[in-house]
Image (cartoon, rainbow, N blue to C red; front, top):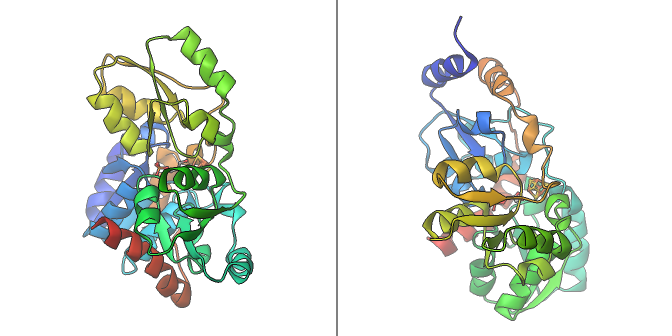
Length: 300
Ligand code: 13P
Ligand code: SF4
């Protein structure tokens, strides 16, 4: 009897499939993926792959973004009900209402939004390039959705008139200055690295702020040996592999439960039965592509 990992490897070959996984997924899921990374890296891989099937191990907006960039490919979600709480905090209709109030503003939408919400966005961004995108937009007045904290951070860094939304990530919103201080007291030599979905008071006290992949690169390149990592705990697996001998400390409650829904077994089921396929309405596909393409053009 073949192991789950062996069955997955055989099916991947037979069906010309690729497995992409976000940095927050379970270690055993990351270990069977062809590529593990942040939202931006995963979007790039999805756009570049010549596989026929993309099995996307992440929350649903990530798979949708892969489909927007690769409409000709079959994109499968092992757990279609694994959703991002922040993405649910901003609908297309809500953006239409705010646009009516600020008709001269440009809408920059964090990638953590549904495909339908992206149809009302002018430019898309991820945590890795939010500041670059906001700086590149030829307008000083920006409506930034849905993450209040990331919006506030880019407002401070860009100096633009950024109108904020009230969305947040429950995982990062829960990180407090007090928790950070307690970790600093326990590990006085540790550098503090934080994801920009944390609140601004936390970010202002961090030594480094970046996307999950930027955090990884920073810790790997740093000559420090200990890090307080203010993002989701799944990062511990990649950090441990990339930085042998270094130590990483997380706040206890930093868990994204929907990312943890995905298991090797659900990946196998999805590959066998080709379930969880993302199907986007043609109009949504076409309109959501515009802001995502603008983001990739700014980077390219
Ligand atoms: P990254 O793009 O930095 O990996 O972030 C995605 C995310 O959902 C963070 O909570
Ligand atoms: Fe969404 Fe937060 Fe989970 Fe990231 S960690 S996927 S923002 S709920």
